[in-house]
Length: 241
Image (tube, rainbow, N blue to C red; front, side):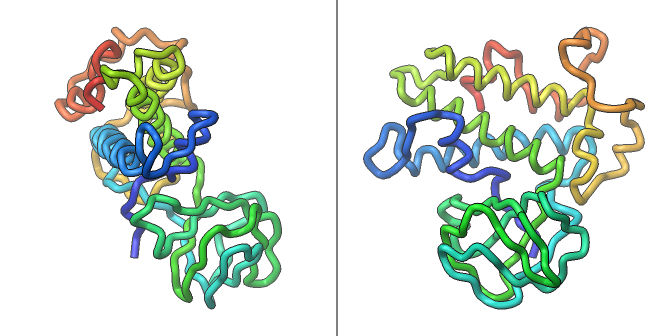
C-alpha cells in the first residue's frame, strides 16, 4: 500500500527548532505540532498538484520487510534491494503512523537482501511493512513539510500565533515560501516522485533547478488558479498555512 502520510516526522520538525521537545505538556503540545504537520502537508500537496503531480507524492522505489524487526536493531532483511544503493535514505512505514514518528534511516551497507541502517531503529516493525526510498524529490518535500510545521510551531509560542513574531519563525516561513515558489517555477526538481499527470507536458524547459535569486517573479506570472490558492503573498502566508 502506498504511503499517504505527511512527508516529514515530528523529529524533523524538532530538528528545525533547536531545543524544542514536543509532548503533552509542552507549548505547543505534541498534538498541536501534529496538526501543524498535517496542515503544511495539505499546503505542499496543493502546490505540487498545481504543477502536474498527483498527490500524495510517492517513491518510485519501494520494498517490504522480510521478517519483523525490533527496536534498537541496526539491520533489516527486505524482499528486494533493486533500486536501493548504499547511502540512500529510506523510510520505514509501520504501526507508528498515527504518531507521525516515522523513521528515516540511512542505508550504510547492503548484503544480499539485508540493509544495515544508521542510526538504530526506534520502533519495531512487522513482516511486510513497507520500506520506501526517499529520493531527491521526497527529500525536498520532507524538508518543505518540516519547514512549514516548524514555523507554525515557533509561532505558537507567541500570543498571536504568528511565526513572524520571532526572527527564527520568520526565517523558517520565508524558506518555506521560497521553496514552494521554486517548486512552482521548476517542477522538474521533483522528477523522481512516482506520479506525474499530463499537465507536466506544459512544464517550462529547464536544464536544472534555478535559484529564486536568479529569477524575476514578474517574469513568471501565476495563471493557474490552483497555484494562486497554494501560495499567498509572503506577508500573509504565515497566518494562513
